[in-house]
Image (cartoon, rainbow, N blue to C red):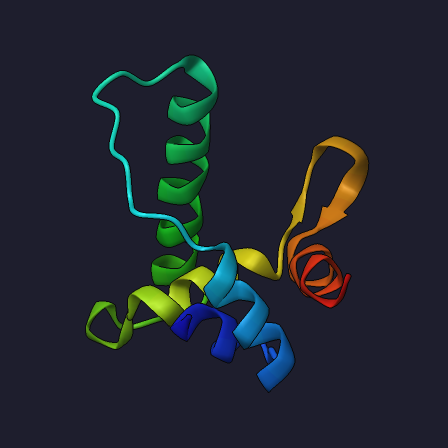
Length: 90
């Protein structure tokens, strides 16, 4: 919910998101897609540290999630923030 606030979700979108959440489920197995995403996150964090001169002490989960959501997904160029907010509006 805090990540949604960081990307500018309005009250209606926040309420809809709350109804869509389910209890967290962690699977100890991961496929190559999950490993690839983890590698992309690592590269993104390194970029923030080295090229954006970010301070590791300033990293928060929500701020970092919002920063990653500003980047398009490579396949079909899906803009995460627009897709999430559009889904919550429907």
